[in-house]
Length: 215
Image (cartoon, rainbow, N blue to C red; front, side, top):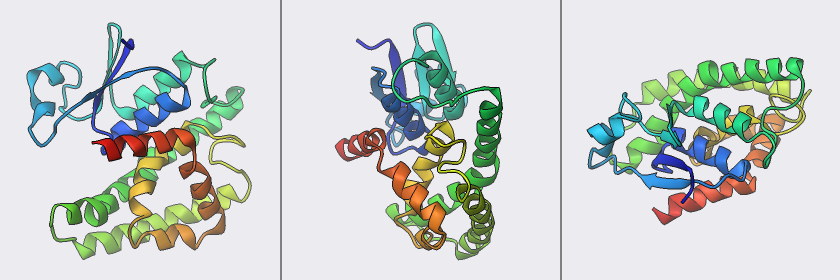
């Protein structure tokens, strides 16, 4: 049995981030499905891993972690010699990666999470999309992607010249939004479009999508 356990659902953007990282690092793990519809993420057994009652929860021996980006950083550093190098180089390169990780967390994720909810998740449950929220966040995302387009004109990936955690962290929301009207914002920026085609074609991400189909 794998020493690592991931508690969650592959449909969760945060869980998918962690799963993609483990696949990139070629690390064995046990996936423990959490039935969120049944409220399993609010039960005491799960709250002992993630006290906020949100997926994912992560266990490695006696270490318990939550918050997907903290987990991906741990995996990338703990298994630095395995699989894909997701942290890239010397201290200056790591600083640049850290910078763009902050951009993803504070600029990209807030707007894309709202758009994912309105355009991808709500329709699944027969809920009405709030067009005002979509319009507001579409404009915000356009500004973020203008910055990305400029960056990606100079660098193949956001953090450095190779695929890192920075790029990986974008995958879950990008995946959902590429199936919505927001796809036009990515497609209309050639460097962003090429970057998305590259990162979404990675074998590790394909394994996460395969997990979704099995659920």
